[in-house]
Structures are given as structure tokens and as C-alpha cells.
Image 1 (cartoon, helix red, strand yellow):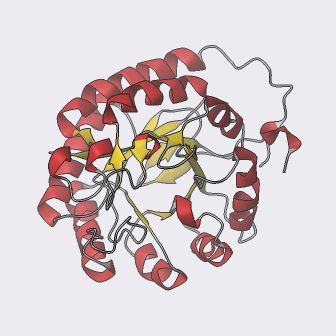
Image 2: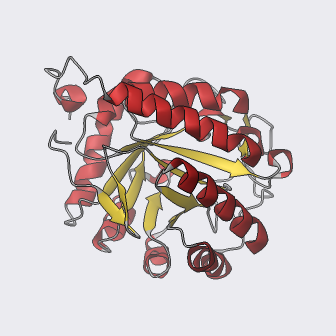
Length: 291
């Protein structure tokens, strides 16, 4: 993926890059305009207090739910209106998933960053269509991909002339209904040219663990996020909710909003401490040449 660091990605006057800790956070899926605005406002206030660049994240549709009866969201049209309201009313940038090429143009007119879901990381047409918008894009590493295989996903985006790219590590399949986070992957991906995000909440998900829905172990979110920042992650992605036990999607692995400030303060402190001590072992080429 190349070792030359790209310039920071500037979004609404804020830099998102490899020299300043940042956060992407919000409810997994849009439940209501009120909830979205309240969470975004709370997160924005906390991030201003800590001087952390922030992007609000929520999905208008979760096309990869476990069961056909699972809540997916309000849909493209209504969901984009909610995201537009969050963006204008709260004054924060927003990011959302796109699941099909046909959704890209509409989403690009509203949001600041387009996200390729992990399960769709190898969908060439989708990755290229998102990249061709010229907007920042977040490429989430699929649960079934080795870290060096993200080289090919990034190259697809770069082929469209786009270098405003985030890469997100979100854990790897480890047997049935289980994910594991290999911190070697975080360190390896952090040596690419692009900002690396660690998805701290999807990484503790238990896919399909509740039969008709996924479970999760939110008690491990903070420890894994700390480890990832120490291993080289530039930013952290978290699903947050006012009442995770009542969330309509990914509640078991979502962080209660009231706990977020302390977590972010610790992560920022850890980021600043570790960046004072440069990585040694830089003789190891990015992705070990496996691509």
C-alpha cells in the first residue's frame, strides 16, 4: 500500500491523518432523528473538550443483518434526510455505509465520507464507484481477509484517482460465531500511507451469537482500543448509544454514551505518549511484501 504518508484528509476544516488522534462514532443504525441528534451533539461536545476531530457515524440501512426480521434502518431516502439534519444542526461531518453502486450518488450528496462495509470490501464495482466520487472513503477490512489482502482493496480505490482513504481493522473470523483481533494486523496496516482506524466495537461482536441477532462483549471494547492505539491505530471507531441494551442493532457491543468521555481521554493520552517514541523495526516493509 506504499510507505509514503499521504497528507491529512481535511473534512469540514478538521484534519484526519496520521499525526492526530481522531474518532468515528454513533449509533450502529439510525433509529430516530432525535437519537441521532442527541448522540452527535454529546459526542461533538466531548470531542471539543478533548480537542479530538470527530465524525458522526450511523447507517440508513444495515443490509447484512443476521435475520430477515432484524431492524435494518429507515432506508436510503429517510435516512439521508436524518444524516443531513445531523450534519447541519450539530455541525459535524457524517459518514455512512453504502451497500450498492446505485446508492453511491445519493449518499455522496449528503455525507462527508462514504464507507464500504467489511462484508463488501471485495466488491470492485462498489469500491470504485465510491472512490470515483472524489470523496473521502473508509475501507473496512473484511472479517475474512488477511491484512495484506487490503492492498488490493486500496489499489481499486486508487485506480479511480482517489487517495482520500481511511483503512479500518475490525477483527477477523476465528471459528464459528467468533472474532479475534490480531494486533500484528493493526501494526502492519498502520504502516500504510493511509490513516488506520480500529473498529473497537465490531471487533467484540459475536456474529449470530443470539440466534437471530449478533451478540457482543462490550466489556472488552476499551482494552482492545487501548491496545490498538498503542499498536499504531490513528483513530478509533465506536458504536455508541444512550441505552445500548435497548438499541435496535448491535446493542451488546455498543458503548454507553455516558462512558465515552473517559475512554476517549485515556485513548488520546495513550496516543500522545506512544507517538513520542517512534516505531523501531521500520526495516520491515509495509504488508511484508505479500501483496
